[in-house]
Image (cartoon, rainbow, N blue to C red; front, top):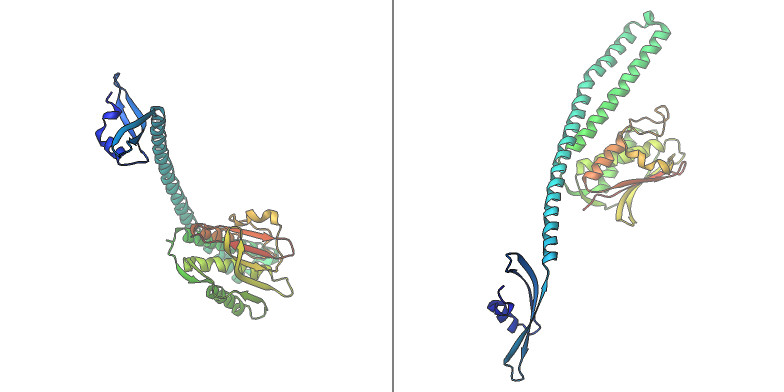
Length: 314
């Protein structure tokens, strides 16, 4: 084994480092194995400043180095496996999205045919069908219409998931104001108070965030219908996670225990006779917010309105 004292290069470094010089070294032992050392060299000088000696301490760290090498190898293997599984999962999800889109798209044509022909039969053969036959056929047509609407919502969900994300500075206050105006113009008989905080901007995809606000404000619009003095608010508030966005209302609300189920496709807490909808809107909102690196949650109690809070990531 070559002597630690004879490592001229590190010796000179140690003489020029009064506090001592520390480094690791690998030496070949007489039996041919490699020994890893943690070495400290501390210079000692005579009173006149001349060199007296180097104090050299070497500690065997072979076991530690070998374990570190094993950990690095395991990490590299793990990272490779994770990358492989991630690629496989991404490919599977892409296939599922493509399949969902294709099936939904292909189902539209026969459903439109059912809807169209049932309407023709009802218009042109009402007398032959009689009241009972008309009622049965009306049920068929209404079911086809609901299914067609559901498929349209599924296609929208698929499009929003597949659309490339294009972040830019977006005036969310202006977006919310525009959406509120659309709802008010579309239902001139309703009086709803909107409170929209001014000056809210975010780095986000403006098209996708409009979809988020349309769904959240649309839900608030729908579920405040039975309330005497409906009010819908959009703004920001401080939470444990930081400054987040919210849409709140004073509508019918829902059981807070069911809040996590809201963002599952087709999940509904009210019958279609009470409130229209397919149960896809909040699932779409959830997907869009997740794509922005954010989160969304709901707070509510029956009869006390609802608040949807969401973030948009960095």
